[in-house]
Image (cartoon, rainbow, N blue to C red; front, side, top):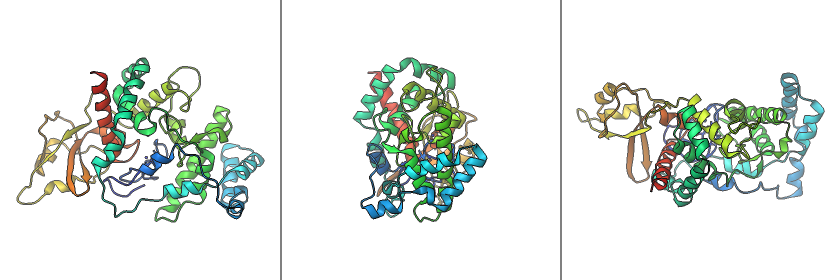
Length: 383
């Protein structure tokens, strides 16, 4: 369940709203609010999830960042945690004294060069591929009962749940080896110099607070939490705030564990999508046909109009948008453009369910790759 400015696709990773645009590297717009899942995804992010955090290269560098508890902003955060959440000050100071500064997180969170053409087909090929398709079939067969129960309870098709977990972590294989406290502290107090630096630091401070609260509520060592360079955790790569707001104990063992329970991950993904607008029984996308009206492309006015389905069929017709597939009466749509570098752009009419997936990671590319992977997995399983 998430940093870019445009609704077009990106550069990559993410998970979330004010916040972060594609902490996972494929965002197309502003990150989803602190509460979304993913901060979130850059292609590099996906590659980095399985790599351990790198230590500072020299003793001098290590000394400069060895003691977060002496940073003024960190101490202000500690005081806020004591006042707002009744944490013990000495315990937090001791924890931040052991927290590592991660150069890797700083490097990976930096935006990709904006001059690189966006290419939907190249992006798709990274996720709709044999390993994830075969793994998806195996995952579905192994957890068929839990997936059927999630579909019945939340209305989210099993293949969509399978595809999200496949895109995020290849069914639990790549959940990340970074200590989440290290990642979040580094990004919360020393985010790279970007136009939205203060807002993004505030986002990560909120996630750091939620990580500490989650660790306390779960009675676990906060340093035991491992995840992505951006702080996303477990099979579905939920940010800490999303775990606390949307994760569910779907295996019924009395605790929520997205790190070790694929069944909890299944229920939590379905619950997240439902909370963010998934409509039971509705489709996700229809191919769009675009026509000029009076010599102009009036349909362009429907692009980049937010992550929601807001146009009815009369709105579409008025600007020259239709579909070869029958469109359900009364349904609303958004016009999605999937750019292909120097090739032709693909256009789709997206429903509420498509946009529910973008709340997991605010990227058209991400949502469409989930949809295409879900179809591929279902087809392979039905053979």
